[in-house]
Amino acid sequence: MKNINSISTNSQAINSKLNNIAFGVILVVFLTILSAFSSNAQKCTYNISVKNNIESVNKEGRVYFMELQNNSSDEIEVKLSVFNKNSEKNPDNTATKNNVFLTATFLNETGNDIEGKLVLKPYELLNFQVKVTVPAGTPIERWNNLLVNAISDKCPTYSPSLTLYTFIPNPDEQ
Image (tube, rainbow, N blue to C red; front, side, top):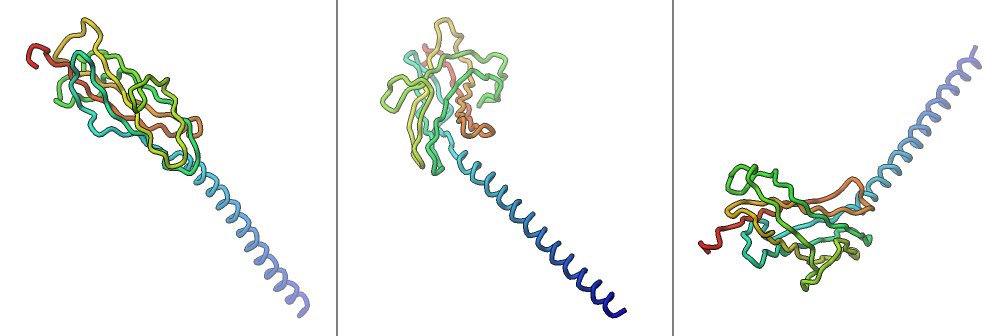
């Protein structure tokens, strides 16, 4: 009888050790997967900013001075896009139904055209411009909301954006 109890106790001890080992292996796998996701998320740390996103435009247009910051240790290529959103609340709380469409282009820091693709080295800060112009015949004393997006193929689930608010004043009152 003593041998059976001894075998049973040994069997329970072995099962307990196997359970602890299995739990340890599962924990290591989980932490490895979590680390992989964390390292992928680290590659997706860039942001876009502007000092003033509310401006008026004159007959020459308006230039918004923007920054794109790579906060990761990897080089990334960021594609910029801009479109007339006109659904954000206007800064003066007027209805967006009267908002107008404006034309926008991307320029580098020195004012030359860029095609909307920027390559940023690790931790690099890049300056660029969004030039907004008013097409002929556009009504005055109206707002426009432009949405600027920054997208990287390395970061398919992350795309920072911001809205530029441009007012078209009456040129006779300037």
